[in-house]
Image 1 (cartoon, rainbow, N blue to C red):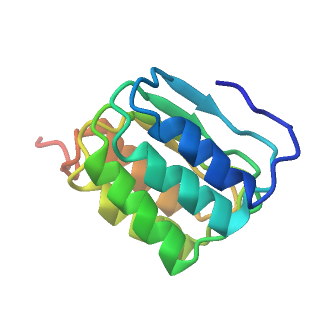
Image 2: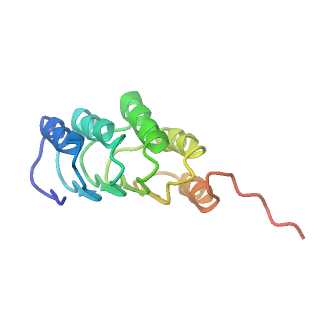
Length: 146
């Protein structure tokens, strides 16, 4: 389902969530790039995605949300609860190093997650930590033995 650049606001998140919660829904890829969901709308969407077994990819690039405790909490729950959702594009939003670090901790038990894109504004070590967890199936990589 592609709803990129449709000028969807915070209230729209509730309606997208209702579409996602329909029990015969077979959406595999959800594209919401360039909208205005902000925190409230994106939380509604993430909560609805928790039980969608067909959904494998979500793109919320540039939806003007920040890493509030509620957003981080629902994202970590989404990592843990939807084991078919493997690709997340969270870039273009306001995620700090601290928020990204909390997301990395959420990836520890989410070995099914293959790709998480976050804003380029965070430190390189944060990007590397995400790559380490994703590349190791949820286990922190260890150095090579010589």
